[in-house]
Length: 478
Image (tube, rainbow, N blue to C red; front, side):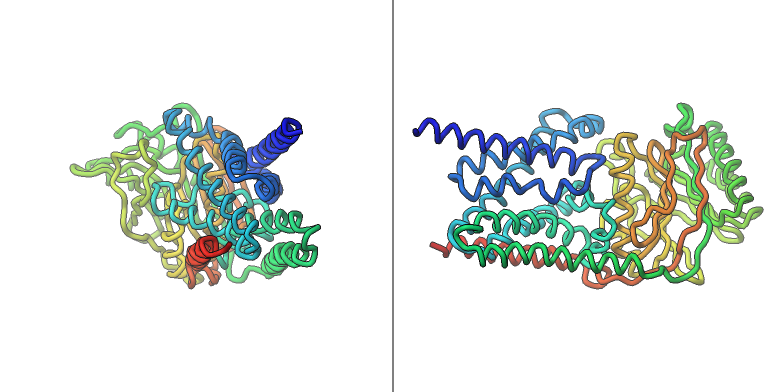
């Protein structure tokens, strides 16, 4: 009998691992299928509610670890050693396991409401701390699995990514708690499960209403260009190579301007510009801006005698050249470049325009700073890795929802993407769809004030407080 019972427990544990890992694999990968993330933790939480803690811990750890392996090839592409990739997955699996064990311990001690909130707040606290501790900002947050779920995405305008991650894990915790109590305490089970479903319903109603509310303000026509040709995708050498590539981009930009483009964005790090080349490089786009009346944003590596910057230069008609230096560098690939520290604003009648570069959009504080200055349009040169064209290319979309601006992002090895402040993709095409891929569309340019702009990471702070409370309940509960 003991053998049979152990066998059954092992089978149930294995099923929980396989189902949760599979749901996480497809639900939080580079091209996530968003509904799966909502249900992924349920098998592990249900198993943990009835199992001994060592068995629950092993099950939770393995489920998260194997579910994370969908990112293995991507991290190896970024140059991370296999041991470091495995360690990063294992570390997150430990955090997930601790959150599951906290849920289990409170549930089994009868602290039902504390158990319900303990699971999501533990994870949100981890995501928020990781956001400051690692050089990748919010990248990797569970919130980014929901970028295609537009009604839910509107929650970012109130809470940022933290509220989305919270609700994504509160829902399965409510379901698991309700199922666990369905026989012993059906009224409690109904109230707790109803709370989870009710909060999700309220958020989705808010999202539907926000999506249905017309976006106010003026619109303008934007153009985007990128070339993934072998001779164009890498950083062009200084001098003739850079000048040749910029003239090729300028030729396509002139065509877009003739079709009505008022703003044109091209990718980051197209070529190298040293001090002696500044005038000749700038003249290419200055003349184009003067002739067409369009504003152009072009990315390049700016080299001075002492430092190198990943820079975006802004060329406007009858205006001095502006520059923006990238704030957040990609480790290993950009370690020799000096981070910038300032914002670049283009003041327009309807709203301000801002400039960021690629990885900058992975971080909430910088975009929120722009949002507080009334930016309604963010112009973003970028460079992705093909494999992550959807995942990393669309992270920028959430910054627009949070801070009330449209995003125009042109990336090599990625997408040319235009989105509004509701996270709707207005137009998009692959950067390898032509020798010089182009995109032309209209986009709202007015700033939208959001709750997140004023309150910032309030959900993260509340999560920290609730986590401390849940741990204290655990220590006091019998």
